[in-house]
Image (cartoon, rainbow, N blue to C red):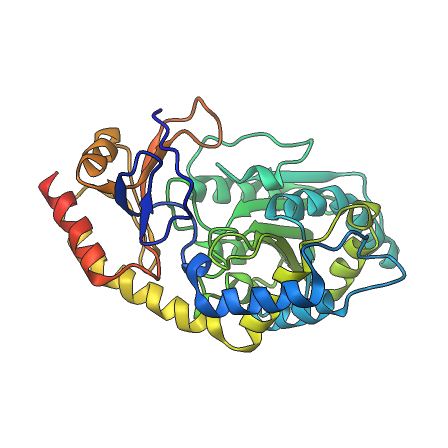
Amino acid sequence: MKIYPTSHLPGRKVLLNNDKEYLYFSGTDYLGMGHHDGFLTYLKEGISNYGTHFGSSRNNSLRLEVYEEAETALAKFSGAPAALTTSSGMWAGQLLMKELPQIIATDLQNKNSHTSNIHYHYAPRVHPALWGAEYVSANSDWEEWAKDTILAIQESGADCVHIICSDSVGSPFVEKFDFSIFKTLPFYREIYLIVDDSHGFGVLGQNGSGVFKELSSIQQVKLIVSSSLNKALGIPGGVILGNHNIIDSIRKSPFFAGASPAAPAYIYAFKKLLESNTYPVVHQKLLDNVRYISGNLAQTNLFVSIPNYPVFCSLNSKLFDFLEENGIMASCFSYPNPTDPPITRIVISAIHEKEDLDRLAEVCMKF
């Protein structure tokens, strides 16, 4: 795989260290927050108020109120009862998976019940953030896996606890997952649905609020969502969304207390962005761009995509080289393992202009 070094933050375009400039259609900054003027203003205010980092535990005697304020705003935006921020999306997922057995034990104890039978059901290609010690990869397609999971739960003993783990949307190869299938799960069972929404938060849902509202309609499960905030939302941190009991339990964890929090300047900026309704505005710009180009890219028969989502994928590695030769930088690399087949990904951003999209369509049609 060829590497293209740069010392510049990509936006609509990217300047490489060899002084070649490309239109940039890659990365995960779906909303273009890295170049948002309001965000930069809020971040400067945050640095002025809080400095560059907070060298303390969130559970220390002295506490910065901005974290709780931002988490309250974030819970409201996502439709979740409660939210807890962490230093990264990867740690949000791993912290959650570490604490789940204790959360389950406490929940069962409160019900005067107990079990030693916890079964994990990992979706195909689920993000490593949700991998636990019990992780076993699934090689079927997502719908087949979901049907098998439902059957396994239906046939299991009533004393079993089931943990279903999945991404909200497929990545790096884009896939849409229909979670409504889990509405056929049996009631009155202990079932947790754990979803990594890193590639959906800020993009999917009303105003980019993510999948929590939609998935909360599945009454048979206890829903917990973890996510990176460092993709569409532009904040170097992570979050766990769930009911108050679950979030309170995780907050008391030594793994939470012993980890450094996200930088408070960014959390302040995040709070201001949520309170000013900035995200719905840029989310609409993203949708406008995706809808503008989707028809033209569909005509090429090159891509797999899903409606109103900014990622277009192809297994044709020659496409990446052709785009590069025509001044367009996409991405093509193996992920998450170096042995995985490389996928050419084209990513549309809210900051792309119509002329950028027209040029992309023109080059793809020429290919």
